[in-house]
Every structure is written in C-alpha cells, then in structure tokens.
Image (cartoon, rainbow, N blue to C red; front, side, top):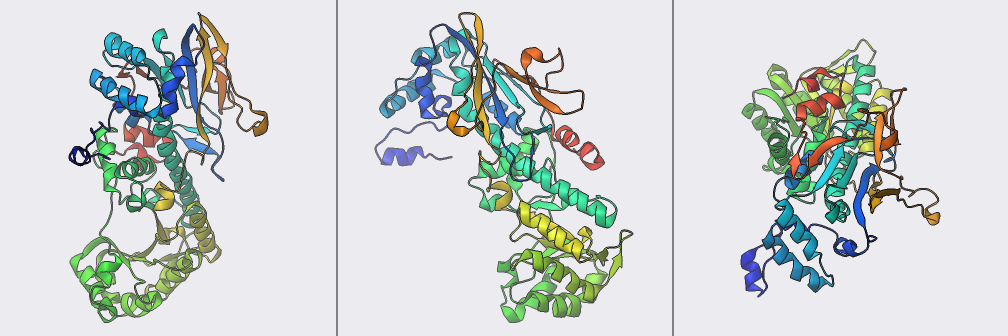
Length: 485
C-alpha cells in the first residue's frame, strides 16, 4: 500500500486513506456532474474490447468478480467525503459534495447502480459488449461514468492476460494433438514465471489468477490467494522444486556437477527442474546429465526437467532436446515425432512471448520433435507486457434519459476514420442463430437472450462463479478443468 502515516507526519502533512473510494477515479470525473444536461436521470454505458491483439481476435472475459467484492456493501462514508473534498479542491475542482452526501444519507454509502455482464469464462469476439452499467437512482446519473476508472481497470487487465494465456494454451493443445496424439497435460505446459516482473503484488495476484483459468502451472503464489478467497479454489495451481543460478553457481565452475548431484539427492522422487546453462549448457547435457549423473537420473522415481536460460530459444530448444535424445534415447509417437525418454524433459522460460512460443513449437515440429518434450515458462510477457490498448478496451456512454425520455448518445470522430465510433443505445449481446456472439441494442434482443445479466445492484453482488466453473466454460471439452476444484 502506497502510504505510511508515520512518514506523512514526519513530513508535516496529513495522511490520506489510500482506500478512499471517492478518490479512486480520474480527477476530471469530479467535474462531470455539472456537465450533464438539466433533467438527466439515467446514463447507460458499456465496456468492450475494440480491436484484436495481434492474432488474438477473441477475449476471454474474466476478473470482474474481484472488483465487485470491493464495490459491495458500504463503500462511501462521511469520513471519506470529509477527507476527499479538501484534497479535490486543492487540485482545482469543486467536488459534488451534495451528490456523495445523497449516497451516504439515502443509500447508506452503498452504490445505487446496476451492473450487468457476461458470465466470467465466456469467450467472445472483439466488439462485443462485456459489461453494461446504469444508475438506479435518478439523482446520481453522474455515477456510472465516475466508476469508469475502476470498471475498466477491473477487466482490461485480467481479461487481457486471460485471453493471451488462453490463446497460447490453445496453440499448445493443437500442437500436442498433432505430434503426440493427445492434449493430455496441456494445463501444465504454460507456467507463470511473472511475479517478479509485475508492477505490484496486486498486479501479480490478479494477472496470475487470470492465467489460472487456462493452466494449473504457476510460480506466482500471490495468485492463489484471490483464487481461494474470491473464486473458491482450494489449491488453484501447482509447481515443482527448481534451481536458480545462485544455487547452481554456489561452488563455482568446478562445483557445478556437485551441485547438480546435490539437487538430485535432495529430491529423490518427483518432477524437478534445473537451470543448466550457468557455464556451458551442452557440456552440462553431455558430461553431467547424460554422463556422470545419467544412471542416477534413470533410477529416479521422477522426471528431470532441464532448463536452458540463454541464447535464441527457437534454435536452442530443438538443439537441447536432440542433445538429450543423444544421451537418453527417444521413442516415436504414433504421429511420427520423436519423444524423449520419459525420465527427462525440457522447460524454456527465457525469451518466451506469444510469438516466440509458437515459433519454437513450429521449429520443433519441423525437426520431427514432439511437443510433449517441452513446457514453457512465461514471465513479463504474460503479466506485464499488456495494456488497455492491447485489446482496445473502452467504456462508453451509449444512452441517456432526460426528463423521462431515452436518447442514443455516441461518438464518431472524423479523424479516427471509423476506428473509434461507439455504439448507440442501451447495448446488449446475444448468440445468433449461427451460434456466434453479436452486439445488439438491448430492446432488439429477445427476452432471456441477453448475455449481459445482472451481477450487481445497489451494493449487492447478485451472481458469482467459482474458478472451477469458469475453467469449464473456457475449456468445455477439457475434463481436467471441468473437474478442477
């Protein structure tokens, strides 16, 4: 948390509560209550992803529930208003004291809004509304847009991570079926290495959680906390003992072999991973793993996973697999691809992103290597190299009710040449007769067919999903996810 009351006192300033709800918005929102036309009673807005992220032209909706738990109950208090008002005046605004006081006095500090959304775990094309929000009290028509900062932040990041992760796990599944005849175990093939590269613990937790919709593999421990507390998963992810360069170089160049043996001795069973490029990767494969320690590895009740950590991964990965095959042997899959002795496998974490991961698999298949030989670790490219513009996320007001009459509102800037044209009217989404999601005006959607359904009203969460349910929706044909706790 970015605060310390003791330090504030030392600097001679009054500390501010970092959880003050009124202050969690773009500052210009503070001025908007004066800008809506006289007689404005309701404003309806929607959230959508407006553009593909490279080759990823769908999004997997996820993460709103983690924000709703922060919006439920009493979220605005008199103390917050008394604290926020002078700070905002100091910035140059006249805050809507009467409006916030109305929420405190009439609604007990609860938010008088209705939020409707897709069910989490829904895979939808770009351009489909994912959230719809409208105020439920005509005295606070300014509130839906005031919440834009929070709502956009709540979904663009976890949905973005979840969508990239879903795309890559899907690519891994396709390649596994092609080379190994089955996608069994794909849920452990893309491991989250991103915690240290995330901008904050909260970022790592939320992004790491989003990845767990598609995977059981993660080193981001903080993701397991919201997975349990918010999505009901007892243990949402798994990992294995693994080395790093500090342990493998602890005895220097001449002690690397001893450290490798120490690692094997410390873990006589199970899957373990060892970084092997501290000095000379291919000497380690030939002389250490495939030489002095070969019988030890073959006698273990488990699997040694060799980890390269430098060089061009598109070249290194196939070379490492073939070097291990030269020492440990291989079999042929029914599909005609070489698969390592089951006692050894490879994991590549260095330089992994959406493009390189697919390129590595293509290079492997071109050399007749089964995808069952490899797992991937993905760090900053999974949790950090994504922003709101990656999928073009935006929240736009699309309908306004003034003196009891609803009207469409929209933007269509000439200079954007159609790329930023927003939707008109109260928005919804539905599955058409062809089985595809389409955006529709809500009044044109048959009763019961709108995919945006109530999740939050007047401070109360109306619908929740477990991680197990979300995994089953995201991967309806994958039994492991449907059965996951």
